[in-house]
Amino acid sequence: MDALARIERVLSEALAEAGAPGAPPRLAAAMHHAVFPRGARLRSRLCLAVAWACGEDDPEAADAAASAIELLHCASLVHDDLPCFDNAEMRRGRPSVHRAFGEPLAVLAGDALIVLAFQVLAKGASRRPERLPELLRIVAGAVGAPHGIAAGQAWECEPEADLSVYQQSKTGALFAAATAAGAAACGQNGDAWRLFGERLGEAYQVADDIADVLSNSGEIGKPTGQDVALERPNAALQLGVRTALERLDRLAADAVAAIPPCRGANELRALTMQETRRLLPKEFARQAA
Amino acid sequence: MDALARIERVLSEALAEAGAPGAPPRLAAAMHHAVFPRGARLRSRLCLAVAWACGEDDPEAADAAASAIELLHCASLVHDDLPCFDNAEMRRGRPSVHRAFGEPLAVLAGDALIVLAFQVLAKGASRRPERLPELLRIVAGAVGAPHGIAAGQAWECEPEADLSVYQQSKTGALFAAATAAGAAACGQNGDAWRLFGERLGEAYQVADDIADVLSNSGEIGKPTGQDVALERPNAALQLGVRTALERLDRLAADAVAAIPPCRGANELRALTMQETRRLLPKEFARQAA
Picture 1 (cartoon, each protein chain N blue to C red):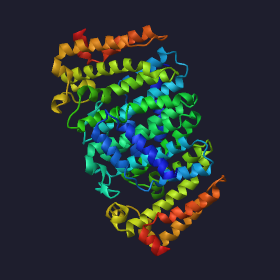
Picture 2 (picture 1 turned 60 degrees about the vertical axis):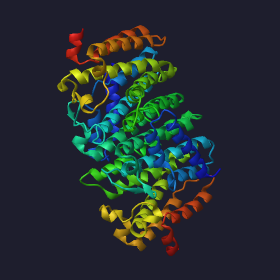
Picture 3 (picture 1 turned 30 degrees about the vertical axis):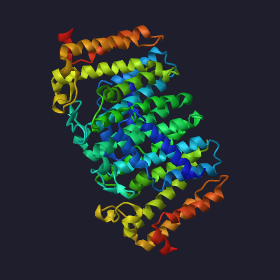
C-alpha cells in the first residue's frame, strides 16, 4: 500500500471512531471537514518516507506517528483560521470550519483533533510501548510550548518577535517532528533526523511565500496575497521571486545533505528533490523549470 | 508529601518547561494564569487518592496522570470561558484568560495546555512505558470525541441533546478518567474504577448546581446564577434545593458503594464522604449540616 493510502486509512478509522454513534453529530462533521478531503499530506508523507528509509520494522507505529502529525496539522489550521486569528473564509477550496459550522464547533473540533492525534499515537504504538514516550515527546514538542505550533502562533501576539524563531515554531517544528518521529517509530534516534525536517520546513515556507505572491487562489484553494493584506513577512516579497526561488533550491540541497546515513538514503534524496519542486504552484513550477 | 503538594510540584515544573527561555512570554503567562493559583484540584486529588488506595507502586506515574488530568481540566475552562461559549469574565476570583490576555492567547493557551498534559503523562510514565498506552487511552478518551469534554461542550451546539449524555461527557468523563487513571498508573484495571468516578462526577454536578443557585460569587470566584442566565439545566432549580441535597447524599453513597476491592478501601470510603460534603458552598454546608 502506498504512503498516502496508509495515511488515509488510519485517518479515516480515527475520524470514524471520534464520530462513532453517541458522538455529537455536528462536532463529528466539523472534525471530518477539517481532515477530508485531504490536502497534500506533506508532513505525514514525509514521516512515512523517513520510516521507510530507516527500514520500517513497525509499520503500524509509523502510520500512527504520520497520522498523528497530520491531525495536529489539521487542528492548527482550524484554529489559525478562527476570526481572532486569520479570519479565513476558505481552506482547501471550501469554507473554513468556523464558516461552515460556527466558531464554537471550530474551537472544539480543533481541540478534539489534538486529542485524537494522541489517541492515534497511543493505539498505533502500543505493540512496542517502549517507543511511545519518545514518540510522544517528539510529536507533542512540535505543537505546544515553548517551541511548537501554538508557541509560533503566539509570537503574533507579542510586541516583538524574531522572524526565524516565529517560522521555526509555527512551521519548522512540525516538519522536524515528522522526520524525527519517522525514525523514532523504527526505534532509531529521532533527533538525528531533525535537521533534515527543519530544512524542508524552511523550504516549504519559502515555497508558500512564493505561492502567496504569485498563484491564483483557485489552484491552492485558499485566498492568496494574504501576507500583504495581513502585513506578514514574506520571503518572496522581501527578496524578490527569483532570489526566493534560488533560496528554495539551496534549502532543498541543504535538506538532502542533512539526511543521516540510512538504508534508503539514495531514494530519499531523490524523493526530496522531486517533492521540493512540487511545493511550488503548478504553473510557476512549469515556468521555472 | 501530601497529594496537593505533589500535584503542585509537577504542575509547576511542567509550566516552567512550557515557559522556558525562548517561549513567547505572554503565552507562558496565559498558561500560568490558567493553572495558578489553584482551584480545588478535585480531579487530580481524586486520581492520587485512587492510586494510593491501589497501593501506588509508581508514584511518578500517578503524579503525572493526576497532573495531566488537572491540565486538561484547566484547558477546558479556558476554552469554555471564551466569548463564543460562556463569555465568562471571571474565573477563580480573577479575570478569565481571554479577559486578561485576549482571545487569541486564550485559544492558544488552551491548546498548549492540552498538549502539555500529554507531555507530562509521557514523561512521568516513561519508567514503565507498558502502562502508557492504557493511561493515554483513559485520559485522552475523557477530553476528546465521541465521549469526552469537547464532545460534551459540543452538545451545546446541537439542536437536541440528552441532558445526562451532555453532563456525563462534559463533567463525568474526566472524573471517571481520574479514578481509572489512578488505578492504571499502578498497573491495575482502570475500567473497574470508572463507576466510582462517574458517581462522583454526578455528585459534583449536583453540588455545582446547588452552588450556582445559592452561593454568593465571592466565595467560589466565578459569577453565580449563570444557569438561569444562560438557560442551562440545573438540578437545584428543577428539583428544589432540599431534594437536590438528598440526591447529592445518595450519589455520594453510590460512589462509595462503587469502590472496587483494594488495599485502602476503608480510607477511601471515609475520604469520599468527607470530600463530597466539601463540594457544597461553605455557608450552605454549615446550614445543611
